Structures are given as structure tokens and as C-alpha cells.
Image (spheres, rainbow, N blue to C red):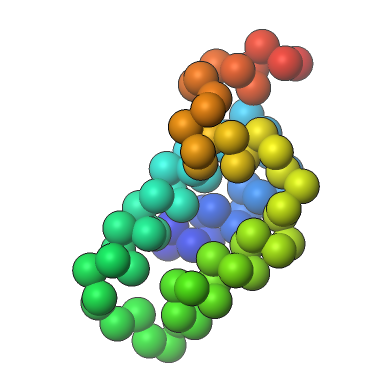
Length: 78
């Protein structure tokens, strides 16, 4: 579910929800860290690499992931 939510937000480039997508990113990393198998889904490392490649230019999202954005920064930019 987190993967679907994350990719949906990024594919639509809906910047107002990037803070949520960053939370999903963090949660997915936590789940991957538990070592729980998620078959038939692709391994987390492959999923993460695909997201990084496909959405590398979404600077606002990556700033949220790194914790460099405030919650309402995207709303103020509009």
C-alpha cells in the first residue's frame, strides 16, 4: 500500500503531498529493515533505485525525505 501511495503522488507530481510521500518513503525503509520478505514485490533496494532514477528531479520531494523542508513550504510556494 505504501508503494502505491508513494508512486501515485510522485507520478502525478502533486507537490502539496510530498511530505506524505516522504513519510511513506521512510516507512518503506523501516519495513525493509525488518527483513520481512515481501514476495512477490520487487526487493526494496530495486524499488528505491527505480524511484530515485525516475523521480530524481523532484527536488521538493527529496528535500522532504532529507528533512530539509517544513510541512507548509509547498503550500506557501503556490
